[in-house]
Image (cartoon, rainbow, N blue to C red; front, side, top):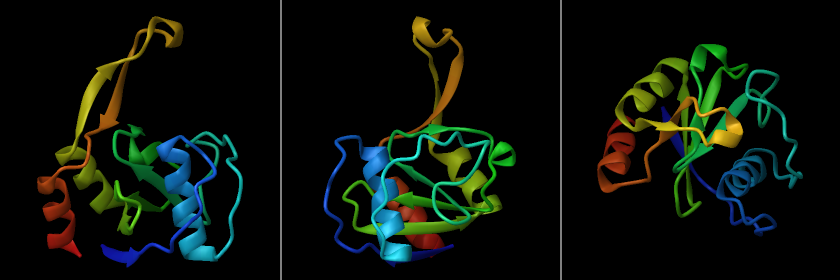
Length: 127
């Protein structure tokens, strides 16, 4: 695992997850791109990376098309870049199950916890 300082990125979306993708994209490629609505099992967010932020919906990393994963800090200033094994460990430590709305079938889904001091400490110890 390693980290990068994020480039300051103009905010064009209110949704934090979409903004996290834009921050990661701008930091890695120096390009600003619109949101693509591509499913996790159909492609990646940026290059070969899947991008997540605090409170994100999660999926089994083995179903993801990405081979690398990025967690963008809640303040959008740091990118934590992980391989599949590190990402799985991250999910095991910082996720919880929640229930989908009735509109979405009422099933269970996995969500990333809100960012905490413990989460940041865990990430920084592995950088």
